[in-house]
Each structure stands twice: as structure tokens, then as C-alpha cells.
Length: 133
Image (cartoon, rainbow, N blue to C red):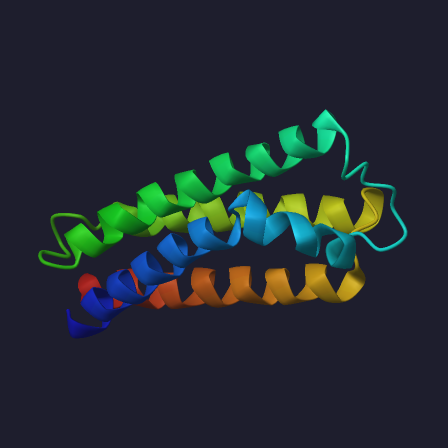
């Protein structure tokens, strides 16, 4: 159960940290690195809409993160956080593949995020298995 508890804590901290990373003042300046050569219209209202949409993604991950942190106190009671996280990471991974192929995302950014998704999925599967051992 210790592994599962530690996984919930690490996941929770990571997801809350992601909310900070998606804040417009943090995320906005990095978009030109994520999408090199793409006109982002940074001085237009549409750019604000884009960065605010990313905040929602960050808040959703932070919500899962807060539940994971809370659930670390009693992992079996909050064990459902693990499959929710795995499905979330699969969907986000599919979105990253789409972004690389069709939305001009820099390959290195997409690969890094895909690796992170895989790590979370695999360690989540281990946490699930260890919790039920």
C-alpha cells in the first residue's frame, strides 16, 4: 500500500504543478516553442482564448491531483483515482499525437509529453496492482 500512497502523492503534486504551468502568464510565452513557425496572434483576443482554454485543462488535472492527495490518506477508499488517471493520460496522449501530426506541435515537445503519459500510465498500473495484492 505504501507504493500506491506514494504514487497518489506524486501524481497529486504533479497535477497541481501542471495547473501552474498552464496559467496564461506562464504558458503563453512558451507556446511559440511548442508551435514553432505558427502564427499565434499573440496580440489578438484569440490568443487569450487559447491560453484560457489551457487553464481549464490545468484546473481539471489539478482537481484530480487534489483528490489524489486527499486519497493518499486512505488509498483503497480512493483507488478509483487510478483508473481515472490512466484514462485521462490515454486521452491526453491521443491528443498529443494529434497535435504532433496535425497541429504543428514541435516533435520534441510531443515526445516528452508522450513519455510522461506513458510513465504515469505504467506506474499507475503498478500502483493499482500493488493496492490489490
